[in-house]
Amino acid sequence: MGTNEQPTLILKDIHKSFGKNKVLNGISIEVNRGELVTFVGPSGCGKTTLLRIIGGFTEHDSGEVILDGRSIGHLPPNLRDTRICFQNYALFPHLTVGENLAYGLKIKKWDKKKIQERVDELLTLVQLEGFKDRMIDKMSGGQQQRVAFARALAYSPKVLLLDEPISNLDANLRILMRDEIRRLQTELYITTVFVTHDQFEAMAISDKIVVLSDGYIQQVGSPIEIYDHPVNEFIASFVGYVNFLDAKIDSIKKETSAAVVSTEYGKLELDIEQAEFVSGDDVLLVIRPETIQIAPSNGMVRQNVIQGTLKRYIYTGALAKCHVMLGDREIIVDIHDPRDHVPLRENDKVEVTISRNVHVLKRQGSGPADT
Image (cartoon, rainbow, N blue to C red; front, top):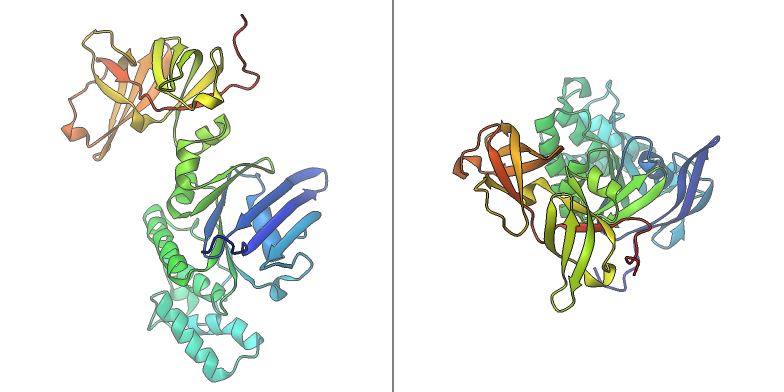
């Protein structure tokens, strides 16, 4: 995409209330052409309401929905160049696959021959060739999801809206269909807005993630940015598992941006963004389980090493989850390829090494130490 290209979809200061319940509080987002953007957040955060506002199924109280430079907030769903794939698929069970795909095209008064050509194209696209005459109620959940996806694409909308379209499938099929949606979206280069409550699904499928909570945007960024550089404690705890550790910055070495921080388990040396912190700041260390190293304790005092006790060891083949007690605090440590790791047993004395590049959040109200 050229750097001067206008975003395909722009939401400006969207507000929405249901009675006294304020669901969206001034949401502003830009979605670029060909981008897959996912709205994610806990139940009740406003993500589905926002998707329905884009599609015209829910009326917003104020703000603007702009598609390709044109305000569409006043238009009904059928006059917007958007199409939605619902969570329950909303297919007609009394019609065949081909008839489901042709239904909207007939309403649009397409030529019969052109409709059949388009139906065949769509079946090929979603790898359902030979299923044109199959009744919907004879299809598996995954096949029905493909039909719903194809129907939404029938007349090439500018924006595809996906409302948790794979949430009704079992775990393994969800992964397969998630990858299939991503393949089709990339192949067609279609601008897509995806809604899910599953943060791992959002991480796997998205170009950009919008994390919502209580009707506000908490953070917008790539999956890597959201996971590795969360802007607050809510984001850090919502996306993936995390260990938190309170600390205070004792000093910062200006020439290296290394900081010495004090914790209840001793001092750690970390690499930080020097401009964001000063000595005396109260901070929160965001420590992902996979960034911690664990080994049998040898009792030696070393930099960034904390002594603990292994309380629980959960082996799952490719991964082992270690529950380690540091004093009265429990942390989780992930071991990848545990068969190649030094054997550990429950109640062993262990040592954990905290990485120098853990993410650091400044506590609200934190400032320089008094002098």
